[in-house]
Image (cartoon, helix red, strand yellow):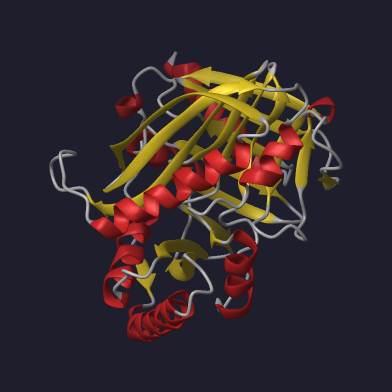
Length: 357
């Protein structure tokens, strides 16, 4: 078994060296790790939601919607029953941009204050604001980093995604956008954050409870014409790496088949990554964040594969460019937000990726 696992990871290294498009991923709390390799270097874009393959979708609708078509790909799999047995190497010393920390803090606090003013003027209920941290390193070992992600984030969707025309992305996201199998539907509302300190038995403040309720209400209101909702479970506390979140599970039956496009359009981007009202919050983000999110807070996953579609929100992620990791972090702003604490939350979230570099 160990020989098979070693061979699997060696294959990933060889494919990346050959600059072939690929994705490797493991779903939350599963043993199976899947590798999909596109057999050519063409960049295919999603044309409709009846296609079959692996999708990598941007935050903004006008971004490139990349598809690895199933008919153009080969698939390999391995099972890892004990993730703690994966052999990993110690990371090389990294050079962090500490001299930019104070400016990043000042800029983010100013951005939060601007959003708070916007919200208190009654123009929005919630806006999710993000920033980008750049970590420099002398050498990056992609497979070694991925092994650390597998070991440390068992209950996350852990992936590497690469296309030579787009770039290299990695992530460990705790948030499912949707799961459709036959006519069964599942999604989750995930919002509210606090550090994990030895226990998941914690008290949540009104700000986090309100933020979570915003997301839950949005999802229910936006899927009720497409899904016969059978069960709402939550909110309850979950652990994601070094953080805790509030989660509510929502499940039901599709009212009609072939409603995937309608549901994706209704849900993405959710208030957990964008805000409310959706279009107003998204426009504020576009006009005021100091960079374009591209695939951060977009979504990715299997589309119409194995009789199901399983899509996850692209959170706790980074893009590797040359000798740098660009780490994306954000948080939801409501009328009860405190700018300093919002910045501290982004610092905590950045540790998810820093811990495995």
